[in-house]
Length: 149
Image (cartoon, rainbow, N blue to C red):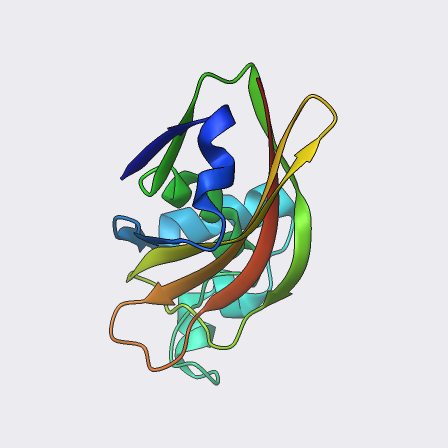
């Protein structure tokens, strides 16, 4: 894990931050996400029907996979000395392959850029979320965070 202050964020520009811990995506997590988003499509929440579907079982929602990024990122980089930080948005998001139920996923992060913004620092990260033993990433995203000192 890398620990920096808001003032030190510019030193991370262009750096590979490494990998997060692994986290399990089980059916309970998928069901909770379905309830929170009201997206109960059968490929996510009906194990019996999904077994006969295109993926051979239920899969995580793409946005569930993306939503794991902030928590996983905390095991990669810690920004200290800030009043607050916010997810500012995404420049690009793609879901190249599904995350089957009971997969372990982890995040890889690299800093695409860092710039000053009114009263704080904006960091743009290139993220890849992968499922263990998968041949393609589950999610690739360029995300933007803002940190205020």
